[in-house]
Amino acid sequence: MKQTIAKLCVLLSAFAFAAPRMMTSSSYHLSAQADAIKGQVVTATGEPLQGARVSLMRTGTADPVLTVRSDADGTYQLTIPTTPGVYAVRVISIGYTPELITLTNTNGQWNGPSQVVMRPIPAGH
Image (cartoon, rainbow, N blue to C red):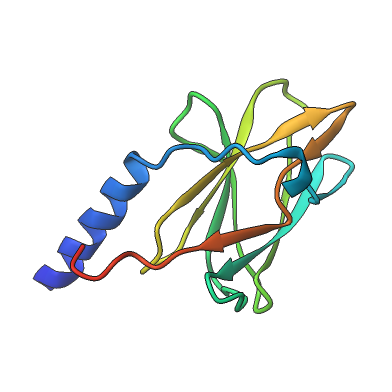
């Protein structure tokens, strides 16, 4: 029980200090249709990660706008609201370092990476 609580505290603290990742334009291949974005969550070895919690976050707020789970093949789909603002995708899965990726809007199209690579939390943390 103490180990579980300790791991949860590490996970939450890692998320609290995770910096948004800014991807270069060559990394943007996300499918965007009618303000819906699709992507895939994978492990560092490229395996699909099922059950990861993928949340659409509005920058400057703590509560997610929308949260879904990745499917068996690691895919997810989020619908971005029409409310103007800066958004990010937060991905959390037990045993992995949380990821926070800023989305951009170019010419009316939302852009982000097609894959979110989750890295294991280092041993002893």
